[in-house]
Length: 399
Ligand code: GLA
Image (cartoon, rainbow, N blue to C red; front, side, top):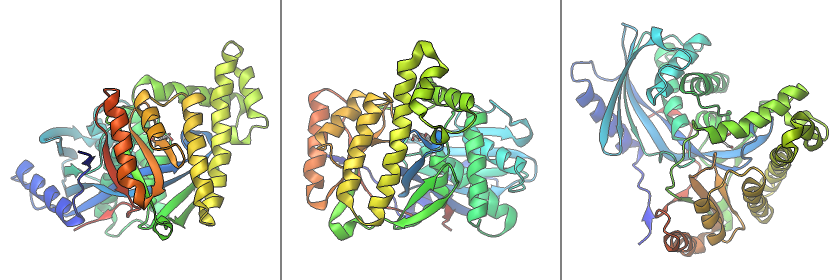
């Protein structure tokens, strides 16, 4: 039996957030509202957001919802429902700093801290109850969903109106800073931009060199195609050394050149000179970045002309590059990629676990999911879980 991931409606998840708020903070006033932000799926453009590249993600219909009320004593109190139990945390805003709090509550408190420091909002404390439908550790940006739901709630409570695109871009920067400095995960800007700027029915073209954001129609149903997500359920975390080591090489090359990989002429050859003892490794990593950037630009052109055949071919090449050159796939991801038929398939997100996506005909969803499942089970991997993904709305108020 295939397992499909359950998703609550907006109303259901808002009700759940309010219910958690009432039980976690029985003496507090009613929440001022419920806000939500989605996870994201990245279609192509992987591990290049920190290298001046480009990505084409979309916001998922799976959200993290927060019921929030302001406080006046400078305290952030958090209750979060996860995996059937409730976790509590508390932090005075004045104590938040680089490296504190470094656990999951750092995503929340760090976002308020960074947004306040950037002058994006004013906050004197919050009570926050969190519920989520975004799978954790699946490469679908549950951390960004958490940061961005809190950011948009705190923004609206501070300003009394919804953030426009410029304010969303500023909030995205604050979420990135929280993740980098407070939690200590050296991630780029892909996830936070997708969660804050996504729009129903649209994919995003994010150019990390120019900062340009375009919302592009993602109307694959017109060609009877769907996007299947297969979560391998092999857990990953980006705060371990693997992600940081990939990024470390790219940062070293960029700092030696004084510009992003995208702007370095003959970047692959240049990379080999940065650390001669590791020349081959540096060549491989930078070749992935250069080629993945070109693939993503080609994919944007293909999408604009509804050329899904080209788009699917580029997805396949992206996975192979992430496997061979960037070395961020796992046996579980590679098994799902092969079982999905390779064309239109690739791992998504940071890698080292997480999910594979497959852009496939509607009529082959069941058989593809079955093939991915059977391949995993035959190798004693965890049973994958599945989802058909459509572009949902970015961070917003629910009730
Ligand atoms: C994670 C990071 C992103 C990005 C991807 C890989 O999701 O948070 O910034 O680097 O990995 O593309």
